Amino acid sequence: MGLLECCREEFGTADLYEVLRVRRKASESEIRRGYHKVSLRVHPDRVGEAGQEKATRQFQILGQVYAVLSDPAKRAVYNEQGTVDEESDVLSQDRDWAAYWRLLFQKITVEDIKTFEEKYIGSEEELADIKQACVDFRGDMDQIMDSLLCAKYTDEPRIRNIIQEAIESGELLPYKAFLMESDEKMNARKMRAEREAREAEKTRRELGLGDKPSDLKALIQSRQKDREKEMDSFLAQMEAKYCHTSKKRKKDN
Image (tube, rainbow, N blue to C red; front, side):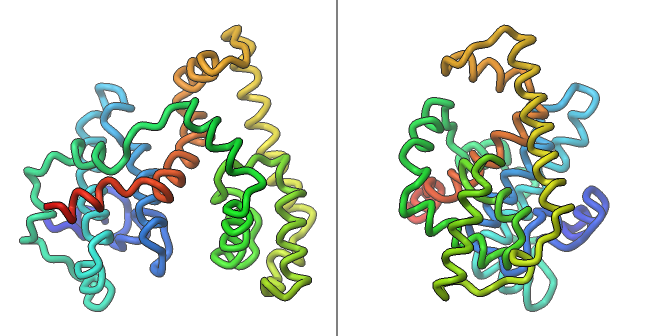
């Protein structure tokens, strides 16, 4: 069975972009981020014994999908013809996809995240990222907030002000999705974020954890599902933005 058929059978679509949940015009970093987020959900190390076989199969397929879309030449062929080269070495069934994944995504500690947040929030880099996210998602605040590094729901007023000022200065287009967002949508986003924050606080209290980095690490490790929501998105984005290890090694070869 070919890659496209496998995608349809395991993920309900033969569209490689839909499998990684990214847009067809996604940048290289967006594709990398999409691969990381989706593959984390089915990583064999994160499922029970009963789901190992299915998770391993899906994990291998995702690695093949990323191998195609991360290669400019193979991606161009897929975009133009809707086909992939099944005989390509990068789609080898014998490849160690777990090792390939670890090569792409080096481990980042909680302490690394805290240090990064302190330097990033309020920086020129964050300002540029906010404006770019507004352009990429055409003013949709749900997607903007989900995509930004280190962004919490309490940051939304600050982020909205940055976008509003950029629109008024002519730096950004007056996107309808931003200017005419309904109160219902804004409230739904706020309620969703507050609910997640309450769940995190409840778990912290139940475990008797404090605010030290070691306590935070223990909290994250104890909440696999919540960690995926709260931490994996950040890790994927930061790695996509700053980790180029795989590219360098590929060039060295």
